[in-house]
Image 1 (tube, rainbow, N blue to C red):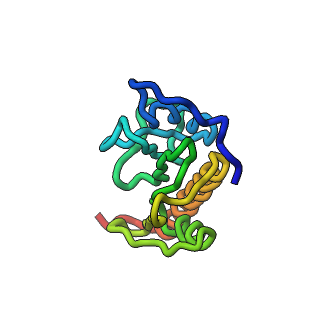
Image 2 (image 1 turned 60 degrees about the vertical axis):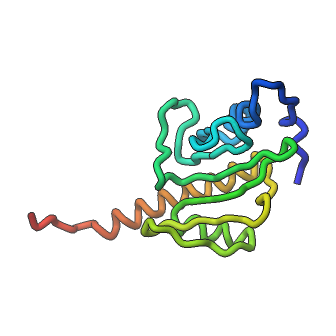
Length: 153
């Protein structure tokens, strides 16, 4: 994996790692990136692949597809992925991980061990594309399933 020297910066007293890297990662991946609400000034970021980065308001509900990132020494580490099972399972195979269950039907998650999996912005962007494809495939599957269905009410 390539080093992310162009992403490294020095931290001053008033800036957190999430402050320093949020805009840069968002520009590189093309998806909405935000600091998690439980730790807005820490060392974590959340990538929302199905949200437009230009919008201030975005869908960050519990059922949002997302990629959890931790910043360590100026590098990005994937700590979690959550999304539709049809997207998570191929990613799990690629990464050699076992997907976990979810209380949401049709969803799954991944939690790599330790600090996570070191990843470049390009790799994070590709994972986001896979999650977005799964979202479209799920929408099509639902539409096909209910095609011709008539509400008896």
